[in-house]
Image (cartoon, rainbow, N blue to C red; front, side):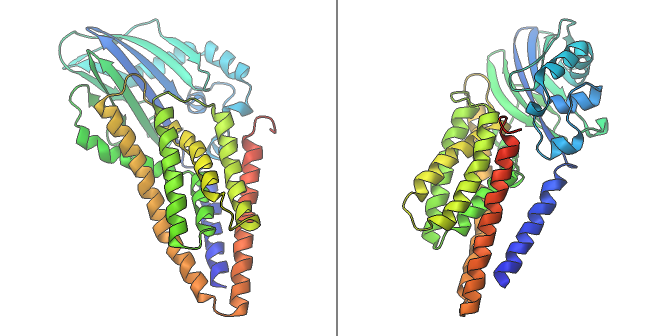
Length: 376
């Protein structure tokens, strides 16, 4: 009965958490800066649906649909591209007005020849050219998608730069809206990327469910260590390779397969709980999840000490969140198993485990159907 209560509480948390994402929206902005002397080129990638709701473009998902995991594939790209072309000047004016560059106390001037297009990823890509004084350190300030715009609750802006031979990257958010190129403190950036990695795991319901169903099938601490190690090594490999651009797999392939991995492992717990193929399976699916993690972090340009530290810190945040879930969940499951000392309790434990696995498998299959472009 205690297991059933635990599972019921877990289901309630997940059911409450899922729709809550429709009302608390976080978006990512990617800024790539390259320049030498007084010329700086900026390429900014933003989420179409957020910009569309702000500027009133056609082909935008509703806030509820976007928050619930809706994808750009649900709206024809032609509709979005046509609407974006018609409002290209508005998009360029908004991005150019919110991305401010300066050297010293003198602001840079954005040119009038901005290029606006719909990238293959579905994001809006705005290319801007800035004219800056040739002396002094370059300061970048981003106000793209402020909370006051009324369309988003939180924005994380990844700034990658290659300015006058100085390469690196940094993360901007509501509490840290500017960076001065060449003066970033490497150590001060580490906690920010650790937090970003932890949030990406904890707020990714599919990753959490995959980890929980692995714990549900583990009987001993050794099982937990083995599957956690296999999953960690696998997703770390593809996270780094995808982030630096050595591996590229479209999201419409990765996301449905991640959902399918959840269903597979849940059903595998029921049909073949003691087989020796568990670790290879977990490793293979870990490679998929690493590609999913890489969506939040990408490196444009050559690797530097700063970008390498960012990748390591981001992955460390994922591992800390993963260890936290394991530390809270697996001991509770062990206590429930040890408390089942009567036949009735053992049957209740078994039924509860089966019910949880079936529920998770069903959730994974539903997500697979929703995410697959061939089934929607």
